[in-house]
Length: 52
Image (tube, rainbow, N blue to C red; front, side):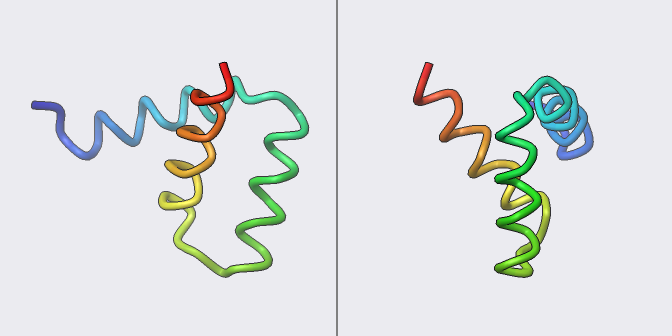
């Protein structure tokens, strides 16, 4: 079982590797919805992985 901290580190690593347009979409989503950043990251990464 991974701790929440380990999961967030993994998310941060994946987020750093996202293409430029994903980063822009991420910033736009955070700005428009005022969501918790972690929730947006999880959603974006899962969407991105589905596309592959």
